[in-house]
Image (cartoon, rainbow, N blue to C red; front, side, top):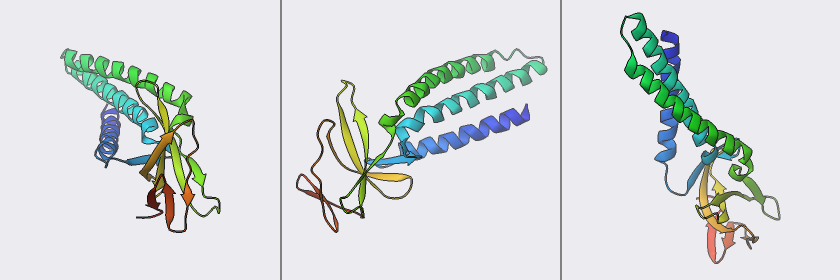
Length: 173
């Protein structure tokens, strides 16, 4: 029981720290692991956290039952977190089926020396566009511009940066 509680608590703390970093990050910044954006990873992190919380409450219920108490609250909370885990399992399966939407694609300059990274974004109405980012480090990407999904953006690649629709973006800031 103690091992389950320790492992569940560790997953909750680590998941909470990751979620805190993602939520508190600056607007226009994306994180990616294995070139998959944070939008792909969020339901997976939440699924692991919900399963950990459910396991924690089940172990607390087992400890209460061993002590001769009912453990009704712990059972209720375990069921509640299991229901949340079921929802995030559905969201995870949906993200895995459409993972190309959440993957960064590299767009290289004609000389091959520079690149920007593109991902897709959709709104509630189903309108989608491509969003372009500059890679800051292996995990962090910073927003540059977006364009309609059906059109190829006319990017003017230069030695110090790129120009798109009259705006200049340096390769590094």
